[in-house]
Amino acid sequence: MTTVLAPRAAFGVIVPSTNTVVEDEYYRFRAPGVSFHSGRIMIRNAALDSDETFAAFLEDLRGQLAAAVESVLTCEPDYLIMGMSAETFWGGTDGNAEFEKWIRELSGLELSTGASACHAALSKLGVRRIGVITPYQPVADEQVHAFFTELGYEVAAVHGLKCDSATSIADVRPEEIRAAFAAVDGPDVDALVQAGTNLPVIGVADELERELDKPVIPINAATLWHAYRANGIDDRIEGAGRLLSTL
Image (cartoon, rainbow, N blue to C red; front, side):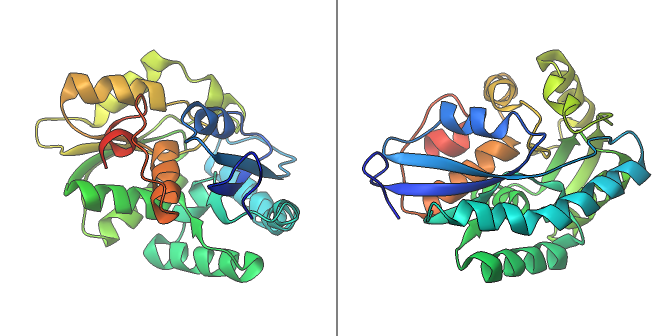
Protein backbone atom coordinates (compact mmCIF):
# COMPACT_ATOMS: atom_id res chain seq x y z
CA MET A 1 0.00 0.00 0.00
CA THR A 2 1.58 3.24 -1.11
CA THR A 3 0.27 6.38 0.58
CA VAL A 4 -0.26 10.04 -0.25
CA LEU A 5 3.02 10.86 1.52
CA ALA A 6 4.85 7.74 0.29
CA PRO A 7 3.79 7.09 -3.32
CA ARG A 8 6.75 4.79 -4.04
CA ALA A 9 6.69 2.35 -1.10
CA ALA A 10 5.66 1.93 2.51
CA PHE A 11 8.08 -0.33 4.37
CA GLY A 12 7.23 -2.22 7.55
CA VAL A 13 10.32 -2.32 9.78
CA ILE A 14 10.58 -4.93 12.54
CA VAL A 15 12.84 -3.80 15.40
CA PRO A 16 13.44 -4.84 19.00
CA SER A 17 11.86 -2.42 21.48
CA THR A 18 15.37 -1.76 22.81
CA ASN A 19 16.64 -0.48 19.45
CA THR A 20 17.20 3.26 18.94
CA VAL A 21 19.43 3.22 15.83
CA VAL A 22 17.57 1.52 12.97
CA GLU A 23 14.82 4.09 12.46
CA ASP A 24 17.26 6.99 12.89
CA GLU A 25 19.70 5.65 10.27
CA TYR A 26 16.92 4.69 7.85
CA TYR A 27 15.38 8.14 7.95
CA ARG A 28 18.76 9.80 7.46
CA PHE A 29 19.00 7.96 4.14
CA ARG A 30 15.34 7.83 3.13
CA ALA A 31 14.66 7.99 -0.58
CA PRO A 32 11.98 10.51 -1.57
CA GLY A 33 8.50 9.04 -1.65
CA VAL A 34 9.07 6.15 0.77
CA SER A 35 8.11 5.72 4.41
CA PHE A 36 9.06 3.44 7.31
CA HIS A 37 6.57 2.04 9.84
CA SER A 38 7.84 0.14 12.85
CA GLY A 39 6.57 -2.98 14.51
CA ARG A 40 8.49 -3.19 17.79
CA ILE A 41 9.39 -6.53 19.33
CA MET A 42 8.78 -6.27 23.07
CA ILE A 43 12.02 -7.08 24.93
CA ARG A 44 11.52 -7.35 28.70
CA ASN A 45 15.09 -8.27 29.63
CA ALA A 46 17.77 -6.38 27.72
CA ALA A 47 20.76 -8.07 29.41
CA LEU A 48 23.41 -9.44 27.02
CA ASP A 49 26.35 -9.79 29.40
CA SER A 50 26.98 -13.51 28.85
CA ASP A 51 26.29 -16.28 26.37
CA GLU A 52 23.41 -17.41 28.58
CA THR A 53 21.70 -14.02 28.74
CA PHE A 54 22.20 -13.57 25.00
CA ALA A 55 20.39 -16.87 24.39
CA ALA A 56 17.58 -15.73 26.71
CA PHE A 57 17.34 -12.45 24.80
CA LEU A 58 16.89 -14.33 21.53
CA GLU A 59 14.27 -16.61 23.05
CA ASP A 60 12.31 -13.56 24.21
CA LEU A 61 12.70 -11.97 20.79
CA ARG A 62 11.39 -15.05 18.97
CA GLY A 63 8.39 -15.23 21.24
CA GLN A 64 7.43 -11.62 20.60
CA LEU A 65 8.37 -11.32 16.93
CA ALA A 66 5.09 -12.61 15.51
CA ALA A 67 3.15 -9.98 17.47
CA ALA A 68 5.37 -7.23 16.05
CA VAL A 69 4.75 -8.48 12.51
CA GLU A 70 1.00 -8.70 13.15
CA SER A 71 1.01 -5.15 14.49
CA VAL A 72 2.84 -3.57 11.56
CA LEU A 73 0.67 -5.37 9.02
CA THR A 74 -2.29 -3.25 10.13
CA CYS A 75 -0.82 -0.27 8.24
CA GLU A 76 -0.68 -2.44 5.08
CA PRO A 77 3.00 -2.05 4.14
CA ASP A 78 4.33 -3.18 0.77
CA TYR A 79 7.40 -4.97 2.08
CA LEU A 80 9.13 -5.87 5.36
CA ILE A 81 12.64 -5.03 6.53
CA MET A 82 13.97 -6.96 9.51
CA GLY A 83 15.75 -4.37 11.66
CA MET A 84 17.21 -7.05 13.91
CA SER A 85 20.07 -9.25 12.84
CA ALA A 86 21.26 -11.92 15.28
CA GLU A 87 18.25 -14.14 14.62
CA THR A 88 18.81 -13.95 10.84
CA PHE A 89 22.33 -15.37 11.17
CA TRP A 90 21.33 -18.09 13.63
CA GLY A 91 21.60 -21.60 12.25
CA GLY A 92 23.65 -20.57 9.23
CA THR A 93 22.18 -20.38 5.74
CA ASP A 94 19.47 -22.93 6.52
CA GLY A 95 18.48 -21.00 9.63
CA ASN A 96 18.14 -17.76 7.69
CA ALA A 97 16.12 -19.49 4.96
CA GLU A 98 13.76 -20.96 7.56
CA PHE A 99 13.43 -17.59 9.26
CA GLU A 100 12.55 -15.87 5.99
CA LYS A 101 10.04 -18.62 5.13
CA TRP A 102 8.35 -18.16 8.52
CA ILE A 103 8.07 -14.39 8.13
CA ARG A 104 6.65 -14.76 4.61
CA GLU A 105 4.04 -17.17 5.91
CA LEU A 106 3.16 -14.82 8.78
CA SER A 107 2.93 -11.71 6.66
CA GLY A 108 2.29 -12.66 3.06
CA LEU A 109 5.06 -10.20 2.15
CA GLU A 110 8.58 -10.35 0.82
CA LEU A 111 11.34 -9.16 3.11
CA SER A 112 14.97 -8.17 3.58
CA THR A 113 16.98 -9.71 6.40
CA GLY A 114 20.38 -8.62 7.63
CA ALA A 115 22.02 -11.92 6.72
CA SER A 116 20.64 -12.05 3.17
CA ALA A 117 21.31 -8.35 2.58
CA CYS A 118 24.95 -8.65 3.61
CA HIS A 119 25.41 -11.68 1.35
CA ALA A 120 23.77 -9.85 -1.57
CA ALA A 121 26.01 -6.83 -1.00
CA LEU A 122 29.20 -8.89 -0.83
CA SER A 123 28.19 -10.80 -3.96
CA LYS A 124 27.51 -7.55 -5.81
CA LEU A 125 30.90 -6.21 -4.76
CA GLY A 126 32.65 -9.44 -5.76
CA VAL A 127 34.65 -9.84 -2.54
CA ARG A 128 35.55 -13.08 -0.80
CA ARG A 129 37.73 -12.39 2.26
CA ILE A 130 36.06 -10.37 5.00
CA GLY A 131 36.51 -9.06 8.52
CA VAL A 132 33.38 -8.77 10.67
CA ILE A 133 32.49 -6.76 13.76
CA THR A 134 29.46 -7.25 16.01
CA PRO A 135 28.17 -6.01 19.37
CA TYR A 136 27.59 -9.63 20.38
CA GLN A 137 28.84 -12.23 22.82
CA PRO A 138 30.92 -15.17 21.49
CA VAL A 139 27.90 -17.47 21.10
CA ALA A 140 26.43 -15.13 18.49
CA ASP A 141 29.78 -14.34 16.85
CA GLU A 142 30.12 -18.06 16.15
CA GLN A 143 26.80 -18.01 14.30
CA VAL A 144 27.84 -15.03 12.19
CA HIS A 145 31.14 -16.72 11.34
CA ALA A 146 29.35 -19.94 10.38
CA PHE A 147 26.84 -18.15 8.14
CA PHE A 148 29.48 -16.43 6.03
CA THR A 149 31.74 -19.49 5.94
CA GLU A 150 28.89 -21.68 4.67
CA LEU A 151 28.46 -19.25 1.77
CA GLY A 152 32.10 -19.62 0.81
CA TYR A 153 33.53 -16.41 2.25
CA GLU A 154 36.88 -16.46 3.98
CA VAL A 155 36.33 -14.89 7.38
CA ALA A 156 39.62 -13.40 8.52
CA ALA A 157 38.21 -12.57 11.97
CA VAL A 158 35.05 -11.74 13.89
CA HIS A 159 35.41 -9.15 16.64
CA GLY A 160 32.54 -9.00 19.12
CA LEU A 161 32.25 -5.91 21.32
CA LYS A 162 30.42 -7.92 24.01
CA CYS A 163 27.97 -5.14 24.85
CA ASP A 164 26.34 -5.88 28.18
CA SER A 165 22.77 -4.97 27.19
CA ALA A 166 20.67 -4.53 24.09
CA THR A 167 20.26 -0.81 24.81
CA SER A 168 23.93 -0.16 25.51
CA ILE A 169 24.84 -1.27 21.99
CA ALA A 170 23.67 2.16 20.81
CA ASP A 171 26.16 3.84 23.18
CA VAL A 172 29.27 2.50 21.42
CA ARG A 173 31.35 5.49 20.36
CA PRO A 174 32.76 6.05 16.85
CA GLU A 175 36.33 5.56 18.08
CA GLU A 176 35.39 2.15 19.50
CA ILE A 177 33.82 1.16 16.20
CA ARG A 178 36.94 2.26 14.33
CA ALA A 179 39.11 0.22 16.70
CA ALA A 180 36.92 -2.84 16.19
CA PHE A 181 37.20 -2.57 12.41
CA ALA A 182 40.98 -2.14 12.72
CA ALA A 183 41.12 -5.38 14.72
CA VAL A 184 39.65 -7.40 11.82
CA ASP A 185 41.24 -5.52 8.91
CA GLY A 186 44.44 -6.29 7.05
CA PRO A 187 45.97 -6.07 3.57
CA ASP A 188 44.45 -9.44 2.66
CA VAL A 189 40.90 -8.43 3.73
CA ASP A 190 38.69 -7.41 0.80
CA ALA A 191 35.80 -5.91 2.77
CA LEU A 192 34.63 -5.14 6.29
CA VAL A 193 31.16 -6.08 7.52
CA GLN A 194 29.15 -5.11 10.60
CA ALA A 195 26.27 -7.01 12.21
CA GLY A 196 24.01 -5.80 15.03
CA THR A 197 21.37 -3.25 14.02
CA ASN A 198 21.55 -1.14 17.19
CA LEU A 199 25.23 -0.34 16.57
CA PRO A 200 25.51 3.18 15.02
CA VAL A 201 27.97 2.46 12.22
CA ILE A 202 26.83 4.03 8.94
CA GLY A 203 28.57 7.37 9.43
CA VAL A 204 31.85 5.76 10.53
CA ALA A 205 31.71 3.24 7.70
CA ASP A 206 31.26 5.94 5.08
CA GLU A 207 34.43 7.66 6.32
CA LEU A 208 36.40 4.41 6.58
CA GLU A 209 35.58 3.37 3.03
CA ARG A 210 37.30 6.46 1.71
CA GLU A 211 40.25 6.11 4.08
CA LEU A 212 40.83 2.39 3.47
CA ASP A 213 39.72 2.26 -0.17
CA LYS A 214 37.73 -0.91 0.43
CA PRO A 215 34.04 -1.68 1.03
CA VAL A 216 32.70 -1.28 4.55
CA ILE A 217 29.21 -2.72 4.88
CA PRO A 218 27.07 -1.65 7.85
CA ILE A 219 24.08 -3.91 8.30
CA ASN A 220 21.53 -1.08 8.33
CA ALA A 221 22.87 0.28 5.04
CA ALA A 222 22.78 -3.25 3.61
CA THR A 223 19.14 -3.92 4.54
CA LEU A 224 18.07 -0.49 3.33
CA TRP A 225 19.91 -0.97 0.01
CA HIS A 226 18.50 -4.48 -0.37
CA ALA A 227 14.91 -3.34 0.31
CA TYR A 228 15.19 -0.35 -2.03
CA ARG A 229 16.57 -2.37 -4.92
CA ALA A 230 14.04 -5.20 -4.39
CA ASN A 231 11.30 -2.61 -4.82
CA GLY A 232 12.74 -0.92 -7.89
CA ILE A 233 14.06 2.11 -5.99
CA ASP A 234 17.43 2.82 -7.63
CA ASP A 235 18.18 6.23 -6.09
CA ARG A 236 21.84 6.93 -5.42
CA ILE A 237 22.10 8.29 -1.87
CA GLU A 238 25.30 9.84 -0.55
CA GLY A 239 26.70 9.51 2.97
CA ALA A 240 25.93 5.85 3.63
CA GLY A 241 28.77 4.21 1.73
CA ARG A 242 29.14 2.80 -1.74
CA LEU A 243 26.18 0.41 -1.53
CA LEU A 244 23.62 3.18 -1.56
CA SER A 245 25.66 5.68 -3.58
CA THR A 246 26.85 3.51 -6.47
CA LEU A 247 25.20 0.06 -6.60
